[in-house]
Amino acid sequence: MKNTYDTIILEGGSLKCAFTAGILDVFLDNEFIDFENLYGVSSGSMAMSYFISRQRKNFITVTRALVENPEFLSYRNSFTSSGLMNLDFLEEYVRETFPFDEDKALKNIEGKTVKIIATDKMTGKPHYITPTKENWINVLMASATLPFITKGETIVDGVKLFDGGYSDPIPVREAIKNGSKKILVIRTRPSDVRLDQSYVSWLAEYWNYDNDAISDLFHNSYKTYNDRAEFLCGEKPEGIDWHVISPPEPLKSDGYYLYKEDVDADYRLGLEMGLDFLRSLKED
Image (cartoon, rainbow, N blue to C red):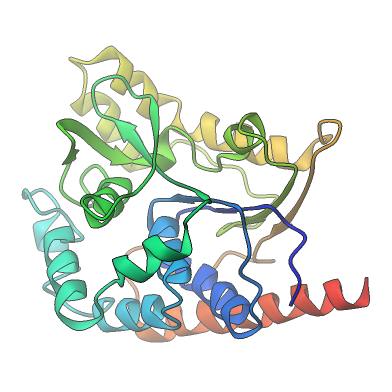
């Protein structure tokens, strides 16, 4: 199916990206794949990577296998070095059971722009990282590293990084700055949702009291998110167009105490909304 969008942007959201995976699997089935620019944040970057490598259903299969696995998700580990969600276990599990096809992914992005967003642990600034064969998996882990929820940092090329959702949760402005004109944004929260400061962000703000940049980042993280959400709902810059696919209601997997049925429901909703989107393009 012909694709007139030059850019796709995938918001993060931990296991909520089962919804994103449903949409992307529909795109794969209908060969709606020709994006010149791809931006992924946090777990959205993992869904993006499987999309790039054309590994249909890998993201949801991994998610279903891990959501009730105590080696991956355990409240007992929240204040240990591994955190609530054990990314080291995730990385090992993926490599052994549903390995990401880096060679195919690299071939498929030749001539394209692919960016995985992570946050610098010293400055709080976003890094827009182009993945390579040497660092792709490590960068995915960096973009998904959350304070207290996972291990606190991932080192990429000597730089300590964590979840890109804190510094640029929906990088539409970055895409526009780099030349994107027609953008498809896949959200994991309803478009009208605005955030208050979360308990995790509040705790991280005080935990990092000795680094003003990081403390301020966590203090303002909900404002950063709301700014991006408001931008998408506002007037579009001249010559720029975008379309947002977002769930109509909060997703079932919005939280950390989850079951397979929750991610399955979100995945099915993604399939339905992905099909609806493609049907609307045919009608136009």
